[in-house]
Amino acid sequence: MSKGMEGGVSRRSFLKGAGVAAAAVAGSAALAGCATDSAGAASGDWMPKSWDYETDLLVIGYGGAGMWASLIGADECGQEVIVLEKAPVEGGGNSRINNGEWTIVEENEKDRFKKYIKAFTHGKTPDNMIEAWVNECARNTEYADKYGMTYEVSEVALAGAIPEYYFLDDNAYEGSCKLSSVDGFGMLTFRELDAQREKLGVQVLFDCHDERLIQNPETKEIVGAYTMIGSEEKTVKARKGVIMTCGGFEFNEDLKNEYLKCYPFKFEGWQYNTGDGIKMAEDVGAKLWHMDMAISMYSMWTRDPENDFSILYFMPDVSYFNVNRLGKRYVNENNMGSPHNGWHTLLHFDDAIDDYDRIPSWGIFDQSCFDAGKLSTSQGDFFECGNFASDLPDEIRAWDGWSQDNKAELEKGWIIKGDTIEELAKKIKDFDHWMDPETLKATFDEYQEFCEAGKDARFDRDAKTLKALDAGPYYAVSIYPGSCSTLGGPMKNEHGQVLDTAQNPIPRLYSAGCFGNFQSHSYGITGGNNAENQVWGRISARHASDLEAWDAKK
Image 1: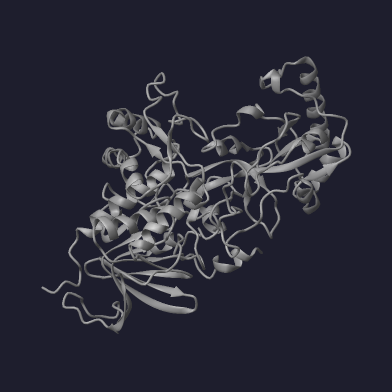
Image 2: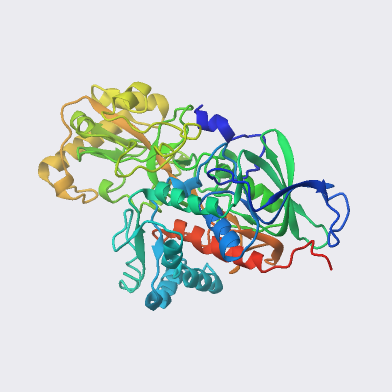
């Protein structure tokens, strides 16, 4: 297992701190270490006898959402803030290792963009949530400028259209939002904002895990949390509120198997996102929503237990085709779907095998394609995002990225090789017994004929991309649903308050970011994940800051 995996992805429970950070700065929130005797605090077995730390706002998770909640809480609202982070050193969550794009909505486009969100969510996201999100999203550039973020406004998305579902209602929503363009991806943004956090004296505690929320059994208020810091249990008093920014559950196999629509489902994101916050929220009565939702497409999974994550996948040449488990083509390879929701292409259930017949799929390619370039990305590439990013400390980085000539991956067995199509098919069958070598050979022969004719009679693939495979050898990589992040978590309202099973707010408990994303069955906002962090991080921090402290002397 990689060094980073050993560092913090403990399976002792589902519980997780979440997030990421830079240096822990002594400031703002004080180490108390004395017995709590506050007038407003009820006594009882549920209440810790002493507090190791006290603060106004407790943020659990230091990714993008935790960053924004911390900045707004400390700077705009003047609160003491402590952040608990699961990673052993710094990090930043998926926000640090993603594209860095975030949604920009201009004042004159707010109404049109609200209609767009309602259209692609089919009315499943409450109107008041849409209203709050778009209104706050319109302030993203204001806050980016305030905190010195480096960006440009772009009309073109790195991954997909903006908005994603521009075809809705005769293109009525095309151009209703714009996008930031960040040369340094999320890594640059994290560094810039973390510097602001440090100036404000917001303390970040690392190696925090196995948190439990502390709830008043009578009022249902959340008054703080227990956390393990390394091997020691600590108590943290949150006088005004707890903001959970715990990310997704991309690296919790049990939760993925329970909630996602198919399995296996692998991700390339932040390895400390193990879904611990889900159990924490449920334990205090929270209602979960959007648990079957993920931002994902089709990607490689190496099946290597030492590198158990997905890897971005693209062919460096056009001499390839994709097949399902049985050896049949099933799609125009140039149009497998959105980079955000393309995983749905793989959700085809075949009653004959009583299983998903496209999980895994196989990318079949020839020597010329192998020699044309890398099948994925490496450190320093134009698309350096994922858990190999050069900006990550060695303790966190999972691997060093794809090799320049694909040979290291071939040697590891991540790429399968056969001198003939028949030999390749047999090697695939050794892994997945449903592969039919005769069917794969027939598919290969048919595809070669399509290339010679310049016409894909099955799926109408663009003739410009029809290039016959050469005489061998041949190669294959396994394709699975995977990529970025899950989006399920506790249900919240327009103030960022976490709701209970009756959809009433749990007092003093909030969520932001991928931990209960407000979008419903689909992800339709390019740059929306980073905007989700900005929007609900700011909203939650403001609302919690306006509360009277639960231990205020009466």
